[in-house]
Image (cartoon, rainbow, N blue to C red; front, side, top):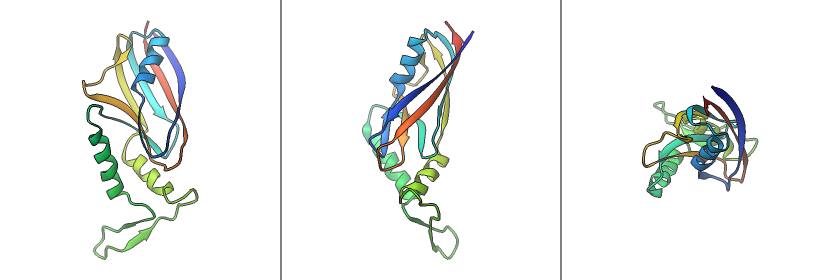
Length: 150
């Protein structure tokens, strides 16, 4: 049994999804890890890691639109009876800053998978995505920690 740590660097193009499944499987292949468990962790508070469909891009489009509807920019409507508009206090890095943190809190920053034959176990239509919540291009670090047999 071996433990291997690594980091993959992802350059985003701004808000949206990046399929990182191949990078994860390449890490397993390069380290000759046959079976085990891998933990994948984002080192950031304004992007997420998710598993979702890879066959129809409309799924990701709809997911992004839905998230924007429940986490608007600049302010939100209170769920209290008065339905007042509440502006975000945290906006040091722009209008997408606080919404990005909320989206991250509603999703995942860490995922774990079993892997067999140097590939993570996913459903036939599934991929692992880094979901960038910020508008601008970002450099993201994803930490990988695998425990497995060679």
